[in-house]
Image (tube, rainbow, N blue to C red; front, side, top):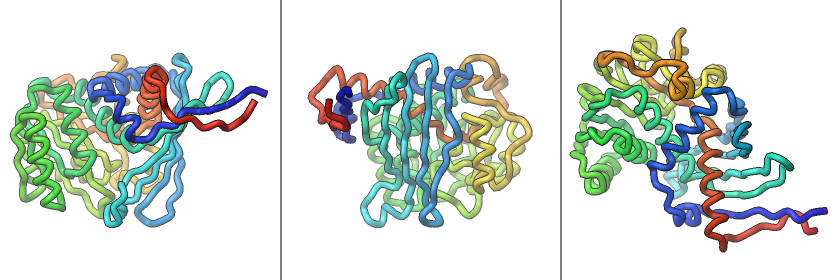
Length: 327
């Protein structure tokens, strides 16, 4: 019987590999293209819910032509910030698709953050106006930050950011730190309406909500909306009144409706991001179109990024290994 061992990668190990946001975006775009061509197994993510506002999801994916696959096991516990733990934590395992043997176990907290923002950036490539200048961000946490950086990567024209957070200190840190890092003018706003009105792109990166934050009348012509809360932050008129509704996977979106997401239901017409990337469907066609994109988060994005990290780690060497089966 053969020996089976796998590489172990901590968050520090992954960060030390210094994979840039531009590379992450290109990987996620390639993954979405494979999905659009029907060459990925990516079933809707089942979950367990130990507390009313928490989840732990199993997220497997397999790229048929690329021969890579694995699964992320990710937890979301919003109250963790009160005890000094990340709200989102996860691990990801890659498997050999020929034998099923595990290849690598890695932290998935950073990967989850960057691949989510990268999906927003890929959406913006095809659905935002090319000359977009003003970005509105509701939520100055991890996702608000990574989304801003990813969007700036694909839309260099972004020059003004308006931000709000329930924690004023978080918004001020966002303004100070990302303003210095990107050179963008960042303003902390007093209300969500001020963030939304006049923005070319609106990102809502909040937690589970009891009522929507973005009203239809604040969602201006030509704007791209990016909702990260599975339909909870945008009111029903905005959701159903948008000229186009985009999601990363229609089947998973419908699955989440059954789980209580999308409280205003799903629009009757939709586009899938992967099919837009491959040219089978059209993203933005007119300057004045209002496009709302609510990506539900696909395991394929985690797996394709994780595989790149794994290959880099193998090249560098020196990482801890776990022996599962002796010869």
